[in-house]
Figure 1 (cartoon, rainbow, N blue to C red):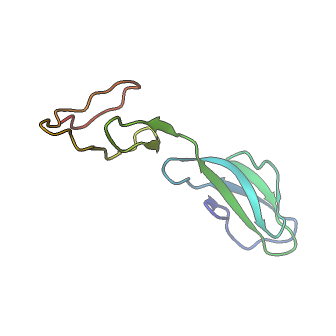
Figure 2 (tube, rainbow, N blue to C red; figure 1 turned 90 degrees about the vertical axis):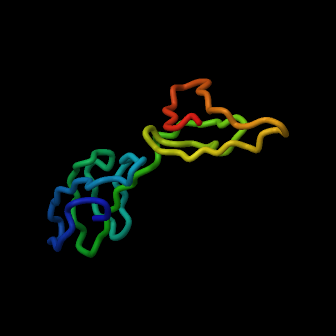
Length: 118
């Protein structure tokens, strides 16, 4: 059982409870998939479910996907991209026109937390 609890040696047709351990940060559980050996997963969309062991070795994998994407647009700078809530994102200003200096970052929309506006 990859990314889950339930690994072990089992008999043919034995019913085994499996449970998700944890998805990587920024990802959420989607479903269990049969990676090898055709085990029977009773409800692949639940974090905790039952697997019926086939009469051979089998592997079950929890599929986790990034689902918390929010777009960040940095005007006159670098750091644009899609990020998860709470993710720390380094941003950098573009070069200023001749005779001007960078003053501060300003939030335009969406409520991002800027740790150092200067």
